[in-house]
Image (tube, rainbow, N blue to C red; front, side, top):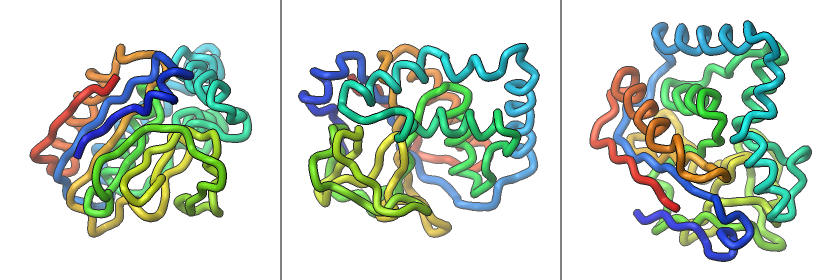
Length: 219
């Protein structure tokens, strides 16, 4: 599988960069050790002198600017990293779904970067990061059909299947998933992507029997 950034998106968002990781994993319920790491992260955020200042961190602001450049209202269509931070700040904490999903959400909160997570068995061909076109939609996970026009999306040979706002049901991970691709989305350049990929790799090995892990940066 090859991952590229569409030239038209790059023209509007010249600092766009992606970190992507592929791995074989074992899907399971979230173990106590990972739950504790999630609780520690939540506690650190809530104990900050001004926790809501995280919503103005550089990566969050860059994501909003990227959405605006593509023609999407970032107040209505939030990046998933911002949505997770807002959830923590509201006292709801990180969702507990499965080991792999919870790892991705934890790294997203730590890095302030949205991360797409896909079952490679359902990705068809190469993936392109581009702007959604008029009339394009898909059913988001646990959501109604999402209007993709102007939204940054990941698209394979069958069309869009994910975005930094909400991924599709078509390529979502399930209890049967064995091979994943996780894509970190930065609108502020490649700095920090490699370390976030390594953090994700370490957590997958520790808690999800991660094997055959490969990390790359796409600019």
